[in-house]
Image 1: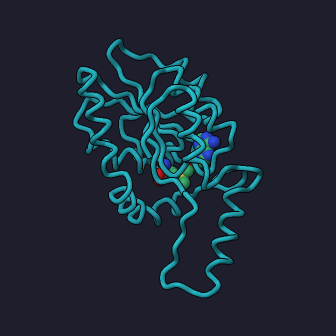
Image 2: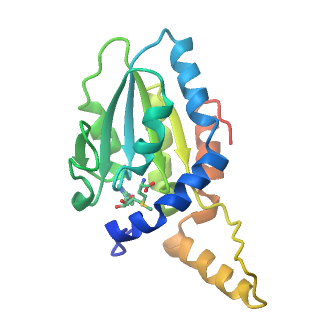
Image 3: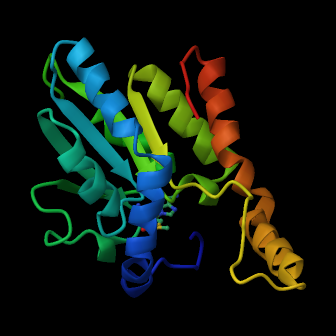
Length: 202
Ligand SMILES: C[S@@+](CC[C@H](N)C(=O)[O-])C[C@H]1O[C@@H](n2cnc3c(N)ncnc32)[C@H](O)[C@@H]1O
């Protein structure tokens, strides 16, 4: 959601179980890879900055699947989402993705910390400028990135209906509002990261 469209707490709660199933299907291997990366770099503590954290679903999924020391920073433009009860023990930061440079400049890390930029269900609502900030900051801080649950333009409705293409087209238009990449955002970010010398897997 962006602009005047808020991702309400009730809406985030409604989609939670479907999101968890989708994470299991599509992102199940990513925490293992991230943990291996951490082990490979000496069992360092992961400092995970969760962008567009909402009510904390990304962290609830990832934290128990990462058998490493962790520190979490939950970031969202909507202060109403940043409640201690949803983000226990995390640092709470009300900020926009475009403020990421300032946020990271103020983040005090210990010598052996490994910075991870992560988000779920966010990439497809970002603008080109925000995706560029994300790629720039990932590269600048030599951070790992774990970005999941993005709309990629594949939408299947069950049960199907002959008019489904109308809904698909309307959804696609909405995603691409104000020249956003929408469903192209994951691929766009991957390219921006590779342009900056980062290795990506999709
Ligand atoms: C679809 S919700 C996903 C929330 C959570 N990550 C999850 O997986 O349930 C998107 C969240 O990103 C936040 N958001 C959207 N655009 C943002 C931006 N440019 N900067 C910071 N937060 C943003 C919204 O307020 C919302 O909480």
